[in-house]
Amino acid sequence: MDNLLISACLLGISCRYDGESREYDLKGLEKKFNLIPVCPEIYGGLPTPRVPSEIAGDMVLNREGKNVTAQYNKGARETLRMAKLFDAKYALLKAKSPSCGKDRVYDGSFTGTLVRGEGITTKLLKENGVEIFTEDEIDLLLEKQAK
Ligand code: SF4
Image 1: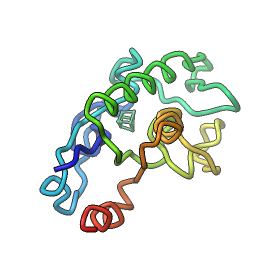
Image 2: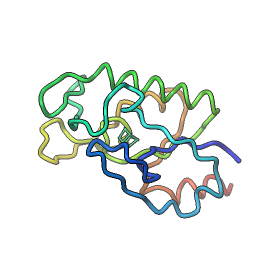
Image 3: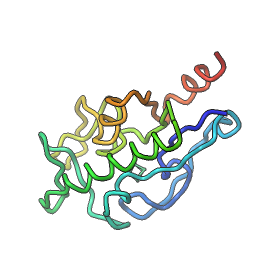
Image 4: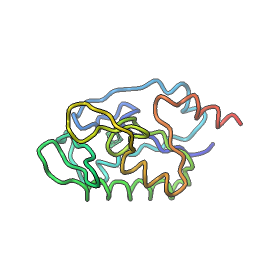
């Protein structure tokens, strides 16, 4: 079976910014892939729970205005290291997160407004050839594996 990086919070691990856990229906993905849980924000040195952050231009700022770009970049690099260690060609990452989001992220205003864009980790993984899916695209990922 191929290895698949997966946002740990999608597995019910309590690494979300609010310290809560939420389990998602993986539609049997665990029978098709070896799941490798990752949490870039933890790898970047941030605590749980933590002040939520959003991407603002070329920086990541938390809701208190603190610049946490370095932590987000470190988390992305460490997650890429995991992808290489496990030779993972695919990653299933949590939508809308400033680390893991794909296609859309919050706009930096902390008003719940989404804009086109991607998380810091998503971007680095993509640049290194890892194909990214969100929890809304599990069917696509399963189709890919079936081919
Ligand atoms: Fe989940 Fe990614 Fe946020 Fe970690 S950084 S809590 S894996 S969305």
